[in-house]
Length: 78
Figure (cartoon, helix red, strand yellow):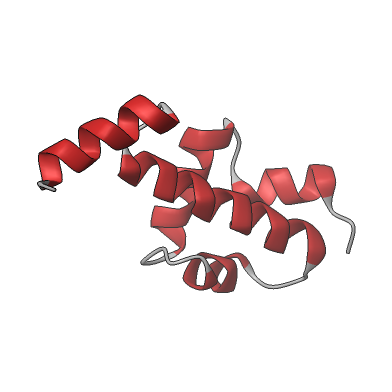
């Protein structure tokens, strides 16, 4: 199966591109870590596979509409 065929089939099946799905899964994991642990944002970013806190904050804000710090303050169970 070629790469182009896989990407097209994935998008038709799941509804989004493979990389967008992958980033979405990282954000889901980050939200879980933010809500259930007291890890610093930089550690959450690294645990979820982001290169640094700035990259994490930008991706999180794009996906959620708010920054990770603000999201944590609103939903923290720590």
